[in-house]
Amino acid sequence: MVWGRPVAFYALAAFFAAYVLFLYGPMIAIFVLSFQGPQGGLTFPMNGVSLFWFEKLFAGGGIVNIGAAFRRSLLLGAVVMILTVVISVCSGLAFRKRFRGSAALFYVAVASLIVPSIITSLGIALEFRILDDGIKKFGPDWLAADHTTWMGLFTSGLGAHLTWTLPFGLLIMFAIFNRFNPSYEEAARDQGATAWQGFRYVVLPLILPSVVGIGLFGFTLSWDEIARSSQAIGEVNTLPLELQGLTTTVTRPDVYALGTLTSAVSFVVILAALAGIRLLQRRTSRSARDAVAGPAR
Amino acid sequence: MVSVSRPAGRRFARLRLSGEAVAWLQALPMGLVFGLFFLLPLALVVMVSFWDYNEYEMIPAFSGRGYSDTFEGCLAQLPDLCTILRTYAKTVKLCFLVWLFTLGIGFTVAYFLAFHVKSKTWQIGLTLLCTIPFWTSNVIRMIAWIPLLGRNGLVNQALTGLRLTPQPVEWLLFSEFSVVLSLVHLFTFFMVVPIFNSMIRIDRSLIEAAYDGGATALQTLVNVVIPLSKPGIVIGSIFVITIVMGDFITVGVMGGQQIASAGKIIETRLNALQFPAAAANAVILLGFTLMIIFLLSKLVDIRKEL
Image 1 (cartoon, rainbow over the protein chains, first blue to last red):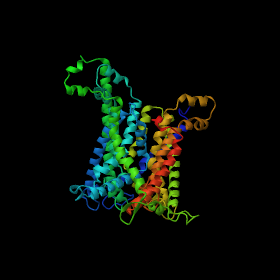
Image 2: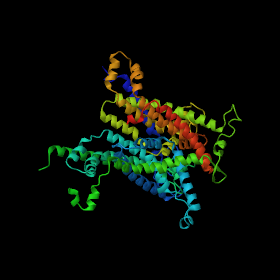
Image 3: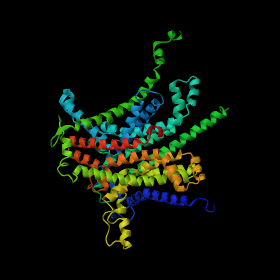
């Protein structure tokens, strides 16, 4: 063939390029526009280039307290990340064995992923509302006297986020163990390793790159979560909720600056995670090479 | 026996739990989270949907008011559709449009990545390129359309600049068009991943056999590739359809808070503190969504596809 590749390839490649442009175009537009000059508006053309809107963001003038929401979201994301990793790995190990109820747990996890978020959020809100009412009416005096609510960032909010991140974590664990070669672990057991040692020194190092991936999912899904948080977060707002509130009154580019900032955090986390995964993979393959070559003399 | 000489604590540490007990302990944290923050809340939604309410609080007494308020006037107004049925009709329409576009685009992109990109490195690189926007907040990806579609946005600047329209086009933003566009923009990737996953497992010799047997490219696509990609298509469809059915954020932000949807009704009721009415709407939405999933999952076994 003269062309090397069929015509269909070029047609599809063009389609793919258009899709990528469709994905990135709008986002690049707001990243650029967030560097508008002080007189600039919400649309092109650029009216000078400055960091004015970022400074305005941190000064706290005009927009609600972004700094506090930023710290709250960061902290919640970190806690969700750690819990997602620990709980997903534990249950991933459980699913390697047969146990009664495993099918039910799997289907509950899938259901949690696909039941519309607003319903889960509403349910959690009702749960805490009924709990609070119950405490006020029937609780012991020391508790009921000045009880307001237990709904909050690290109770109902945390739970809502976990119902969203854990299904992803579990599915990743399934994908890991479906491709996992158990002979390494069996070899360790033959050499007299306990179950814990087998996990700690054989299984964990092998699955660690994917476990970092679970952490990445846990953090970023929490960092950008809105629908489940919307009813279940309590008094204070997370950053994406603040951002959503701002969209109805958006008149100046500071909302773009906020968007650029939150995206920047996401990208830093992704890059750190990818770098971590690469590092771990390199270390695993190096120690595998060493093991084949025999101990260094 | 050796164990007799061991100290008691050591013997306890040696106590072997049965494999199933260990598995249960390991699965317990996840079970607890889903029990407390998913199953119990769902049960409460169903329960509260049958409670009574007044202007500012819910009353724990059996009542069908949540449902009767929701379907108010539905019989009287026939053959015209009442509010709730109109809203569901609109939501289903949005859902269908988004499904059609995400499937069309997602299938084509997945097909390109799976069959036309030969090198593994390029495959990973291009997939990653599609993944990156997925890590950005959905709200940001929505407001990103404002500078393009707004009254003074790039599209209108181009249209008026080229004298294609005398004045700026208004329906580009805060309309059904922008809602569908934004949902397609946000969720096409959920179609790409499962379909790509199915396609990558198709035995290449089947396709060669089809070509050797004299099938055209189109015949191969319709008779070999599409049937074998069906599990991915179904899983992607379940994802997209359930997300769009329950969506209230994209419809709110991109519809300028003017378009009603199944998810938006729940939010509106909640803002009015009518919890039982919100719960009744949630039960209806849940039933509707589960029915769609049930019909779709008849077509494929999800657990086999991981």
